[in-house]
Length: 210
Image (cartoon, rainbow, N blue to C red; front, side, top):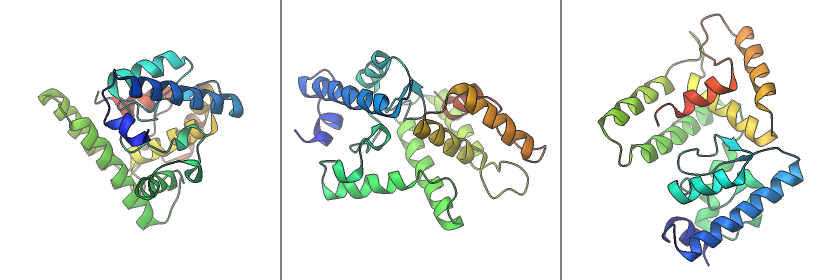
């Protein structure tokens, strides 16, 4: 069965979706073992691959409750390469653009476009079915996305945190080691920088609108 259909069209309690989620968990678990990682990033529509969990049962619950993050038919965060994905050429093109956003420092034009594309897609997804309070929080988060990391910086605060979290997930860094990196970077940047100094603060920043 076409992966896009069961991930985004089939009811979440249907047999195709349940079987598909079970297959995804198997692929993700095999990739975790292959990489020697302790946790797996969760591709649900809330976590959006920003958070990872040791218990696959928690990821499975998220996927049954919230569904998959949009346009994730190629599971590049979980060991699949674009060439291995049995998707249409359109899906491959879409996911290739997403995959290429993993690079941390691009030229200014690509950096700006990638940031806007990523945040706009994320905000559009989160705005769906939100109440007034949630909408207000979301707009505050959008304003923060346009806040420089420090005065005169060409990088936006939320964009830097997003890129760092992506690197954490990609390379399987522990929360403790990631916190140490954040503390070091915070000390290296100018005193007025807004970089979080712990893994908890970084994750909270990305998900505080929920």
